[in-house]
Length: 151
Image (cartoon, rainbow, N blue to C red; front, top):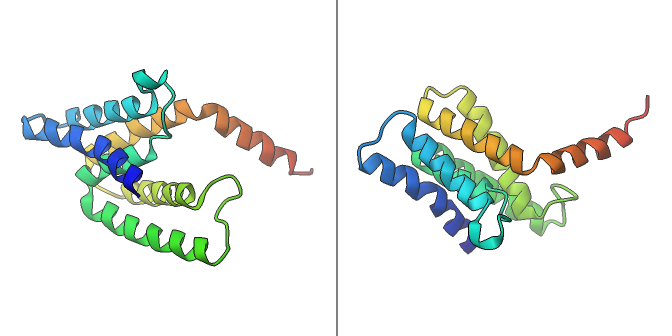
């Protein structure tokens, strides 16, 4: 939870500061996305960082705070419930990573119907960064799932 909090701050603070200095429109979303790039590809760790989901959630906390707070509460409840009942949400992910993934999906669905253009732009830019970073993992998952399909 502590790492999640600090990673979320990495995503929350840049668009907040951009807004405080008067930047509007797409600029806070773009600046927030650069924070996700910094999280995913940190210079001091040979460009090997995290998945970026926590940083994205932090940025979304700036753009759509009510949605993110409610989603985090709901997903925390699910992760707690499943991790203490002996269930696994996904065979390849820890309960926390599964919770991040569920939160990510919930937020995408709600943003589709949102009128908040800045939040949509931030989510688009940031999601592209995660897809680029994890493209090989996505291909591996497709190969694994494809091998189990018999025609």
